[in-house]
Length: 85
Figure 1 (cartoon, rainbow, N blue to C red):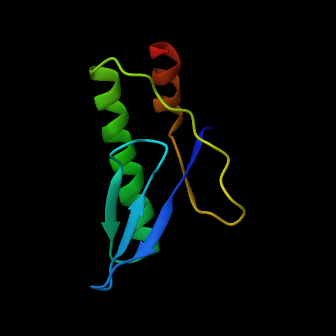
Figure 2: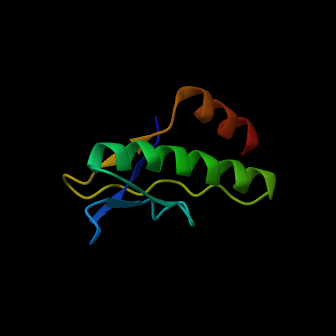
């Protein structure tokens, strides 16, 4: 399954910002790292739907740095992306 690297950054208000740099526009936040990763997956899925709707290319995930958190696309989404491409 495709795994997209996520950049987690602590925010000044105590939340954690999550960005998926390989999927442009995918940025969100959570109360902690676990919630930020859950929100990042949801944001990534929304952006992938937008890319499909606007007939743009789906960017492949790059290899994460060692220890970098990732999100994994659900199998059904992977199947839909395979049909789209």
